[in-house]
Picture 1 (tube, rainbow, N blue to C red):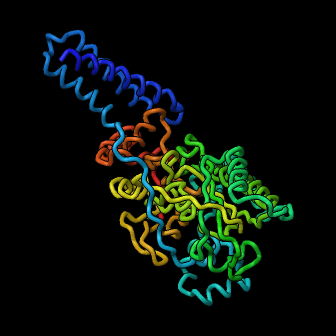
Picture 2: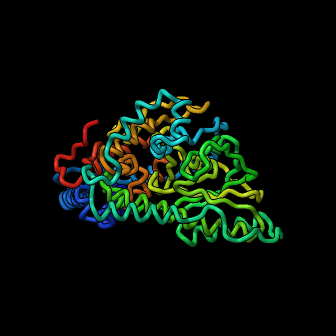
Picture 3: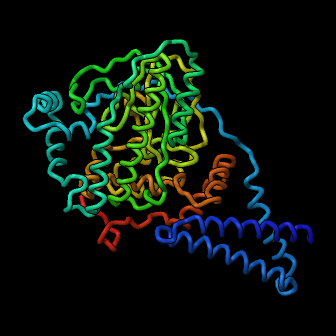
Length: 450
């Protein structure tokens, strides 16, 4: 038993170190409660160690052995059992009409030919859309999330995004480069500019919108392309800013992510064009493709319950960008780190969704089974609160950033699925099952009714 006690003492020292470093990695102004809980856990282990090693006769050998065994087992649980496995490629969904997207409908000008055309085809949507338009706009001073500085920043960042062209300025260069060489250059540029993940996926008909909306001046046009590949990449959103959701300050980080993705994509498109290929950037406000399933097939992550791409390292706390091309780049394979089962057990995004837009059970959409998200309900809350919300990003356990304990948490979830309930309990204990929203002047933490 002496050896067991010694090993348990070493394990307890390791855990105290992990708890101390993880607590110190969190901003005390934003993560006050999680820091306190981490440091309290560290103090608890220290006191238990002091008692067990200082007064073994008082507590007896059995409690000492039990405590030592618990410390050892907690570390042994992280020993690999199941690594990331290659996932199945999902079936090709039916194309989605961009004109049906809620943001596209909200951009229809009253009395315009586009508005008349849309509601002639979809008269069932007119009443609901008129109700949505009657709500305050995002960044409206009358909304709970309003902040004058953040509102200015959001408008400015998206204005810059809209000025970034989707086609390269360079004419296609000589087609004398191999696809592998082109991919290496594109990935090098993307990562050098700040992309945290890059992958390539084959482009399928269901990845394209069927028809364009009016935000590019091409309303109603059928979307066709000769491109066969998509270079997909992700930029990380700052965890501290996301933790401020649903405040407008969190929307600033969202807009910043879209801008960084657009800039990276513009550079990647230029590289591909100068290497001899045809290229097109897809950015916020000018997508021809549906990005999350493409990113999943490119191996960047999996689609979570909230309908967004969830990465293993950053959770949904990312923004995606893509460049499509006709160069036959070698596609990556989708991978799985067990997110589907984790989401079924977790459900924190659905529980905390103030718009009740996230369903707990998968359904069928565009001919495939997937987690269902009510985009109209989500957008309605955006209008009521005055920001793009982001609570689902904030509460997702995969998006938390205390280091290094969260890395061990992800490792445990992936390699030992049986530990998922324990890992969820840890996340709930540290951050609460239903954290209070942060809105200026709303100390009660309640949401606007709707």
